[in-house]
Each structure stands twice: as C-alpha cells, then as structure tokens.
Amino acid sequence: MPGQNFQIAIDGPVAAGKGTISRLVADQLGFLYVDTGAMYRVATLLAVRAGTNLENEPAIVKLIRLSNIQMRNPSHSEKDGRLTTVFLDGEDISWDIRTESISSKVSIVAALPKVREVLVKKQQIIAGTQNVVMEGRDITYRVLPDADLKIYLTGSDIVRAKRRHLQALQRGEFVSYDDVFEQLKIRDKNDTERVNDPLQIVDDAWVIDTSDLKIPQVVRLIVDKVRVMMDR
Image (cartoon, rainbow, N blue to C red; front, side, top):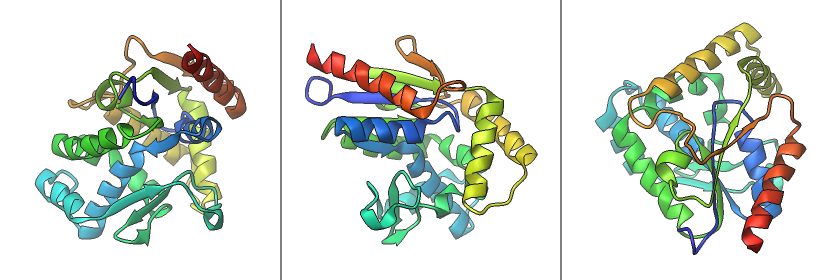
C-alpha cells in the first residue's frame, strides 16, 4: 500500500515496450517486476488447452481456481530472452503463453469480468507486500489506483507492429508483418472498447511515447523520477 511500499503502475497498448522497460526499471530500483498480462495469458492458455469456449466465463474462472500459477524472475539457466518465468502446475509455460495464437485470443478472455476480478485480487495482494513495478492494461485505473507513480507507455501502431513482428521471428514464428499488424489493430480495439476496465489514460498518468526513444532512455527517465520521489 502507498506509504508502506512504493508502487509504480504502468499501462499501455501491446508492444509499447512495457515488459522490457518495466523489468529493467525494477532491476535498477531493486523492485519486484509483475507482468499482469502474463496472468491473462495463462487463463487463455488454460481455456485453449481445455477446449473451452473463450467466452465461457464460469468455466475459465474454475480452471484458474483449480490451477497453480506461479511467477518469478528468471534464473541464470533461463536467460533466453524471457522477462518473467511462469509456471502452470509445475510446467514452465513462459513461452507457450507468448505465441501469436495466444496473443490473438487473450483480449477476449481478459474482457470477462469474473476472470478480471479473480486475477486483480491476486495482483493487489502481491503489490501489498513489497515495492513493485506492475504493468498491464488496467493497473493505473483498477489494480493500483493509488500507486505512487502512474505511467502510460504508448507508441505508433506501425512501430509497435514492427516490434511485435520482430519478436515473433526471434521466437521462430514465421508470421507476416501484415498479419501481425492486423492482429495488433484488433487487440487495440478490443482493449480500448471492452465494457469492463477498458485501456485508458488516467488524468494523473505520465504519458511517455516510446516511438522515437530507445529503451535505455525510457528506463533512465523513469528511474531518475522515482529516485527523486523516494528522496523527498
């Protein structure tokens, strides 16, 4: 909670650099990095593996509650480009949840109110135990509305699609840029138009456009600001 722990809440659209930037900021400050989007990806993977309709809210909530989901920082043996290590019932699914197949479906599952309710509670419990850099789609608005620092990372859709396409190729997924761009536009539409907790910029958020900035520049901006705030 504010006053006990320092909370950095970061929101923004897909491929705005949230994951990489948040992880590096957390590393430099000695904070815990929490990728909330990974939790929704796990929920999506659970539904896909079970052959469950992606809009069957009760069934997906049940799958989440019956599963053991764990997240932690990557170990030395897991330095393969991942930002966080995710386990589902003891299985390392860190890359299984990052495929374009899961990415194209996650916004459907993330729009389900009861799914969000269950996962938001888990996220709030985590943030109440230590200093965190938590990133996702509704952190500044729903998960940590009283966070010490709220940030909205964004970027042009073309730049973000290029980043997404490169990430897919680096993982060995040979998808076309046009397909990635179309999926990104659909994801943006779903994120901003969902009825429950749509992606939005809150009034007190610090908006950073990463289109023309390198990752180290953005990290330095944030780290410097947090250090000034913590020294007050």
